[in-house]
Length: 275
Image: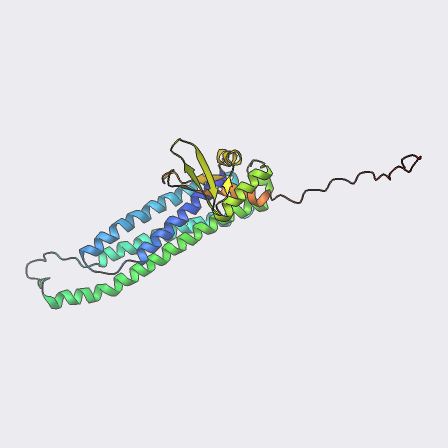
């Protein structure tokens, strides 16, 4: 049984779900404009779906045979992720069907009706239009299912780890200051800024400052993620990773026990002893 970083897999699945959702939006926005323009729009979408199918296969292969398969309920997660691969492949197939049904202008065999004939062109377009609309609608539906299933799988793994502490990966024990900083980032997000002198600071979404020492611990243990694609001077978004969310869910600080009552003494009486 292979040991893998399960919180990292949750993050990968959430990113995969977001990418499926973005592609669903892009396919939904397509209009069935027949001809070469439609072909130019369909090609990149088909390639993007196949790329997401490959990533889903990697996630399924990593989870299969790992320590996660010993967690109660893990079969449901693997089956749901398998459906992602099937639905994404169906979405690609539907767009490929649209490519085949899309009428392109080209020369015909000698003796056939010329494609430039308005009546012939109109008939071809009238036949193809509803077919393309149906293919695009069906493909978008499958992509929406993929996005939902990725989110469901990610949430399922996180729930399983929370409900079964014996299968939970080792997590750092945070101090109150570190937990407070992590919770602030989870509640309203945060940004890290870099000054021209090279010094850095982090601020929570409400504008409050996040002290450097607690934040360094969160970053060291990969409980937060920094969007390094953005300029540090303009501000880099900070989000909580799956590991960070698991820490927040399992290490909620409870009320601190009150100090034990001390012995109560009475004041000395004049000329007497303390009781």
